[in-house]
Image (cartoon, rainbow, N blue to C red):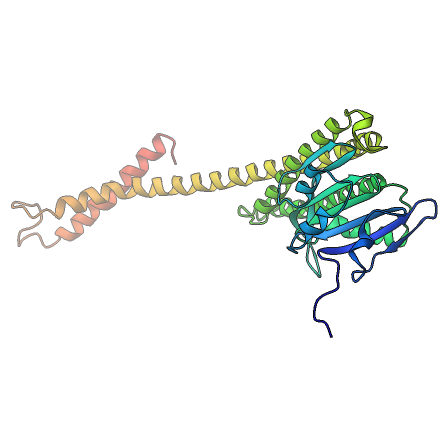
Length: 332
């Protein structure tokens, strides 16, 4: 029995679509490599960059440009969208997931859309792409690869909306804690929330700028239908970006409120410390004076049996004088 794996190297899943029939076929992982190449209908290949054999398989796929292949096999962590020779390729932001949970960790999806094929690659499992796979398995109404690309970006938008709702719920809880009667001044959950909001806003602005620029390309430079799709996707992501920006501003204002409360508490402690210093300074001078090892100190002779009591009275008197002075100048 052969111990060599018969699976298509690097393929996570693949589908072959048949436009006009509203159906698709799952490409078996143990099928020959030729099964993933363009032919009847069009195909969607989703590959894992964690498999070292993936670049070799991508090199065998016809219809992709050298830049598109480089994008699919890169480890870029910056959003990008480019087009050349009727091929659209780039990197989109997404969110990673584990086997049993969805996370707020940002991941990256690399894609290339050409005539008859769409190829997506990733290093770690992602939220949106897995949801698109589930939608395709339930209802495979995709006439062209560019339509599937629109589904991927649309699902990313829905993932963003869900994440914004999660972050909003967390921020509401933090606000209730900070502005509540107890007035919590230390909220460890606010810092990661702010980082997530800032990164989302930055990446969204980049994707929006790229989509706007791509939508101004010539029709013969991009796949059919891409220009209209880019305009629609940009409008939809613009609305989400406004929500993310509003969330970022709320988190910033809440952080400033916490800083204000911390500053007020610090000032109160410094005020108390200053008062204690003012009260203890005169007694310190008195005890320092009587602690000098010099001759002729008052109340030091054998006849001064009440010297300690007199010195203590002077200490109390100096504290009283300090209290009167502080009251007179309005500090107390």
